[in-house]
Image 1 (cartoon, rainbow, N blue to C red):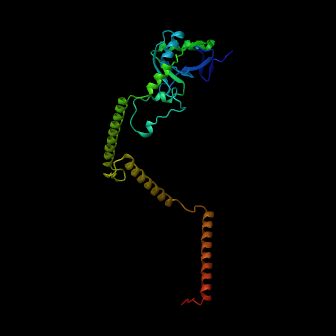
Image 2 (image 1 turned 90 degrees about the vertical axis):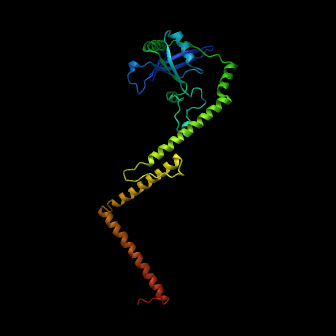
Length: 281
C-alpha cells in the first residue's frame, strides 16, 4: 500500500496533462504562529507544485476535484520563478525606505510552494476534504498545464523589459523618495542633538556632518571609549593576589628581579674598576 502521509503532509499524486508521468504534491493545513486558533484557518499550504503553476491553474484543478471551493488569494514563493535557491531583497541592503510591493510571506516560502487561501470556512473544508480523500485513496487526478508556445515565452520576456518612459518615472520617484528620507533622517538627528543624556552630555552635531552614517559613527565611537574606560575602572577595583600561592609567587618574582638587578650592578662596578673609572666618593 502506497504512503498517503509523510511528516504531517498529505501526498497527492497527479498526472501532468499531456504526459504519462506521476507528480506528487504535498499539502497540509496552513498554521501560523500569529493565528493559533485552527478553527478559523482557511488556508492550505502546498509544496512541490508542478512548474508554471499559478492561481488560474489551482482554480482549474479545484473545479475538477472540489467544485464550489472559491479561492480568495494565492501566495506564491518568489523563488518559484527565480533561478536562485535563496531569495534576497537587495534593495534592503542599499536603502532604508519601506517597500510596499514586497510580500513578506512570499519571500519566506520555499521554492515551488504556495499558500491557497479560501473565501470562507466552508470553501476551505470542501477543498481540503476533497484533496485529503484523493490522497487517502491514492487516486491520480489530472493537473492542468499551461500551453507552452513561443508567445508564452515572448510575453515573459516583454514583462521583464521596462518601457523607457516608465523606467524614467520610476527612477525619478526613487530619487524623490531617497531625498525625502534623507531630509527626514537629518531632522531626526537634529532633534537628537537637543537631547541630554543621563550623564549630562549633549550630542554635538556639526554643520559638516550631514550624513546619518557620519553622525552615528561618532556616537558609536564615544560609546566605545566610555565602555573601555568603565572596563579599566572595574579592573582596578578587582582584588589582586587573593590566594596565598599568588602572594608567594609575586614575592618570588620580585626577589628574582631585585637579584638580577644587583648582579647587573656588580658587573658594572667590576668593569668600571678595571677601567679605573670607579669613584664611590
